[in-house]
Length: 113
Image (cartoon, rainbow, N blue to C red):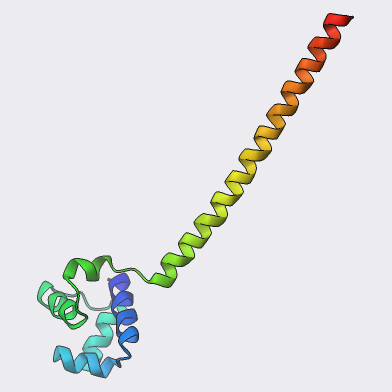
């Protein structure tokens, strides 16, 4: 529930709403809404539908909503890891070429000896 609460808090901040604004729209007390955001209170389906409607999304969208900054951070990290992997693959290919060259050189030296 904490994850859902964080999503709700993020959506609230994106709208520029205070906890009081959202609590009034949901017709609940500010402490009750605060408990939803902090994950202290479990959200029933009707409240979940009410919150998703408030933020103009479906319940599924609300449950699967991700912070774009967090997603971008993961994408950036993935790009860095992919770059490192590509660099390592190039190093491995270069080492394989050197091993083949040394093997050919040894074979050639053995044949001429």
